[in-house]
Image (cartoon, rainbow, N blue to C red; front, side, top):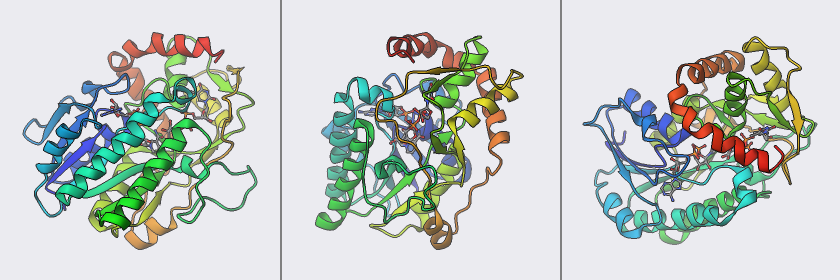
Length: 337
Ligand code: NAD
Ligand code: TDX
């Protein structure tokens, strides 16, 4: 059990859910390193115990700051958990440059510090590194699926995973990697699919479906992602990759129709808009290794109940998302989306 974790990107969506989860489930202390980009929000960490959580505003490519923070992880089980990233595919199509800087140079900077100080490192990645599947493909992604990323975002995540593998093999860095499917839950930025549609409906705007909406994503609640990462930190084998998923495949069309129904609207009340260039068709995770080797299982098994709770969260936390909404929609409007 780690005593002290350095969580990069802890003011973002999944990182903040992990910080909440760790503080509730363990006695560990957490230092968050976050640049507070447009996607980082200190309010996501509000109310957490001050004696156990510290937020450091800074860039993961700042080698001297990273060295100082990693040098503070002195316990045998202390660890870096690396969530910080540029995370949105649509943004990566408009301007890939920050994706290379943060996702590649940032990971390199953290790995070098982990190597210098011999600190355990866990790398958070995505199923998008594997490319996409046909709708009727009976196989799902496993740890053995070849890398085949489609977008600037997913290619930089794939590159960062490969850096980790090389640092394990060449320098003996004590690292693990996890590749997770699409997350939903509280505190997700309104640029992402599910929060965008929920907050559109709150604002009286019709949901926007890219293309035909037949693309499939494999949804997992962010809290289940957190419990899986904690399990890997505690029981994972060094050098191994674990896929995280909760058997949550849904087409985008079905998700939009469910959100509309849960929000008391007609299920057909949405618009089709310009498709995403290079849009991956389907992601699907086979998480057998994580479940059988490490004994992990998701707690959120009812997607519709999880969506209903997420809708409630956005209804009850307008102060959190409102400041981002107009600028996000203005960006989409320019792209015809
Ligand atoms: P997010 O965009 O909500 O949060 C990213 C956080 O990283 C923000 O707080 C931001 O301020 C911070 N950050 C960005 N650049 C930084 C830098 N240079 N230095 C320090 N901090 C910086 O992203 P998210 O959706 O929470 O994703 C978190 C991680 O999980 C990413 O690595 C992403 O690839 C991975 N992931 C996401 C999903 C998903 O469904 N969202 C699925 C699988 C994996
Ligand atoms: O308005 C929209 N309409 C729409 O149809 C938006 C914003 C998205 N979509 C579609 C595109 C995707 O098929 O919904 C699906 C989900 O879109 P995003 O929320 O942008 O997620 P995705 O591109 O699947 O990537 C997400 O999951 C994997 C995260 O953003 C990544 O960080 C993670 O690696």
